[in-house]
Image (cartoon, rainbow, N blue to C red; front, side):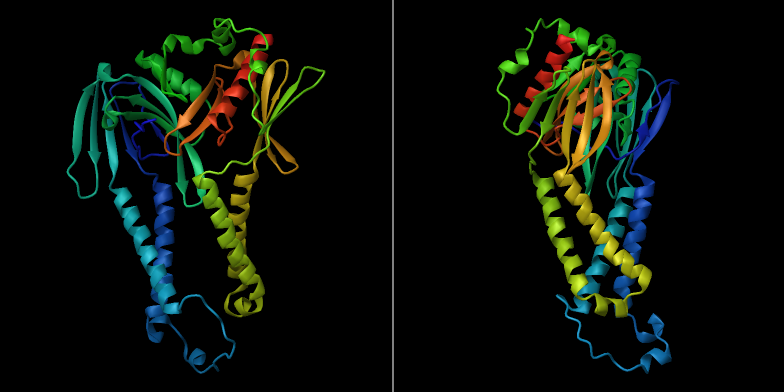
Length: 395
């Protein structure tokens, strides 16, 4: 599937079309950039400290007269190389922050035309104007983005154009709350088709049909009862049915992708650092103060736990007589992620995330959005979707 998804800068953005004309700026999160800038400056200061003369570094005379320690500390790289790397990484982070600070888009909408001005570092400004009728519709998509080993979803509602450079954001957030209602509101206000990226291609819906309950939509398909169980169940999915009518779908296999292998790599590297620090605890304790020593252990431990949870977390779907309930299972612990009554369900689609190459099953009502099977093959998602549809038809 071709990636026809432009990159928007913001993590939080809204073009308010209630009052026209309207204007908004799409730019990188200033709080994230400020945090990155502080981290870059700290790395630079740490790297520079080694290269400063004793007078500038502030070493007191009493420290100069202290006897040298005879404890040998084995390092993989020399202090000179290590501090030079810190300095280079810090300078790289600062340069990236300054570059991102200069990138932004100014979007102006008067009700009939879109006017956009794009500004990039050391590049001439790009401006264009486009009539609203040249846009295909209002598209909802999910972008998977990553800061090192940490990842999150960014939910984007945008005006879709065949030319990706002319696709503009309407709403961007890292929260999925009320996502469908926001998407529906934009489509209805602009009187344009509502578009999503499905497993095969983009799917367009009439904006008037977005108010229809999903049960009403699938009733027009005239599917036979228990049609889902004629399909072969994937062996990595457990399916159980109780006498009370409740059914449980459990994903019991861990699937690896590029981000999974990155998590494994992080676990090995930071786990090895923890083990190395544990064996050399007494030596480290002589050179690092109590609070900093605690942080030295807590940071890699947190990273190891975060990556481990990302790998072992599994989805459990409970289908009762009137609703869908989703749990996330971490070993013997089950955490409820959300529930949607059948009567409130508005969409049950297999969607595609171009940036990560992942498919997932999206269960959406006007209030809630629940994703399951984020790493499953499409065949498994189709089987789960068929079972849920079968339950809705039977009720």
